Image 1 (spheres, rainbow, N blue to C red):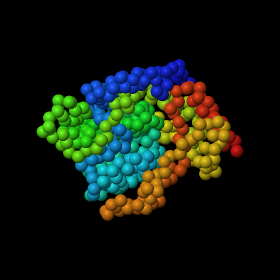
Image 2: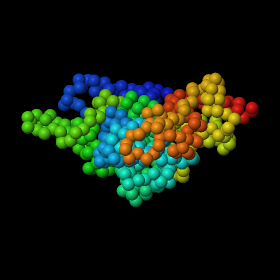
Image 3: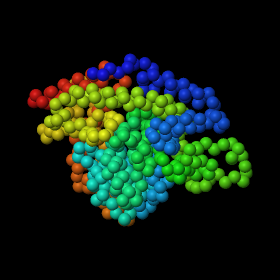
Image 4: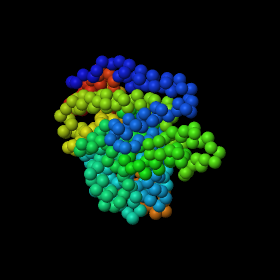
Length: 402
């Protein structure tokens, strides 16, 4: 097995670099003249890393999607096609914008949004597609972008779980009209909470920035800070539009910048954990524990290592319980499909809503979701990963022998 580098404060989840940057913010006493320097550095480096012209920092990865949809002019009466297998925040953001989420089914092997199903769900009200890079795997972006071009649809990537993933040589986060990332605590890089939008469209970036920052006239695609000279005028018209206060705090930006500077290492550690766990699965992967299929030309970023349990005589709970009894850390379940969550099920969110949010809406997703076993990959201690892999192998063998 490939060895992780020796554990040190720099290789911990939060290390000395993060502490150094946070202390620099505290030492500034939050003076207005010193504010936003870390946010600016974070945005510039993020845009460069994700091969985009603009990056705009947010307080979280749900506000990012709301702002991008609103900036694209999507609102009441509009529909946005979303996958059901993901965190409900993706659909919440559509509702926050005043639009209606329309659920399309997933591919049975990659578990990402199916272009064929998307095509079937398009109506005259469809304005956008919001695909998710689930578990760290990009969806079929060529297929989705082709549909978007033919139907003149806005594409917003939800890449909360995909950092440094690639799709046919292109960086995930640079393909759609805009892309959303999350810095919530479970993500590849974190500031506790936070998010980022990337785009190559200057006009869209300016609109997003104004939604992010109270509609201030003085902000723009690459400018988030308002200078003292600008606002020290009693006749100055500050607000060009109505906006939200979605700006990332400077303390969070300091942590996020340190994490971004370490991102290749943080992503590689997850990839290594996934490889170690995959080795433990062995031949069972071709028989009754099926990993997420990775199409040719796509680089997975391994937010989680996920297996689909394909044995009718073993329940999800049977496997989880035996793994945990053997000393395993536990297994996360896939989210309940969004339209089957209590907040959505049988709900009516718009007068023109034609979908019934009930069982049968996305049959592939309904078949896949109850059988997904999600394993942690955010380990910094190789011995811990290898211990979990041995327990996983032991659990598999115990079922194979019965």
